[in-house]
Image (cartoon, rainbow, N blue to C red):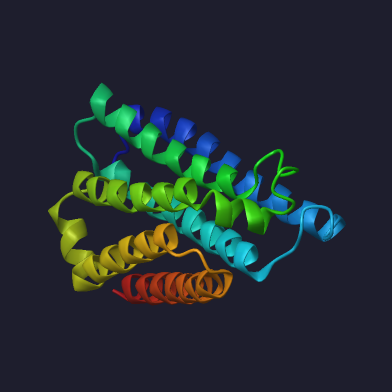
Length: 194
């Protein structure tokens, strides 16, 4: 299959934005390792960071399917860039530059949860459009598990937005991480063996 030269150009911009997302997460993790008490080290926050890392890496992997798009338009280009940018914004919300008024990343996440869980809902909804762009065969390949995944992630986003208790957020973060990791492992190994 010949790759569209327009997609090759788009892939560069996509890679830059997703690379910044991964860099943000890894830089933040390195900062926690270097100074765990400076901005607080919490299981809730770490679960969401690992969740985001798994999600961005697998998203980047599956974006190679955009090479199957036959006709690129400027609107389609803007959508793909906006979708990638939403992943970057989600990652930045996990590692804001200044959390002094909150005391820790966990407190920031819990007190400003609307932004993070709103962005989580947004990337989940944008994924529906991204999947549609890749064509009907992509829907068929993903099957019913994709719809279940979409509903689960939107449910997690809604609960994360509504819940206030730390213990509830810990359970939600652990469930989200376990679910996301298992979903992508099952999806990858199932599709890779086809």
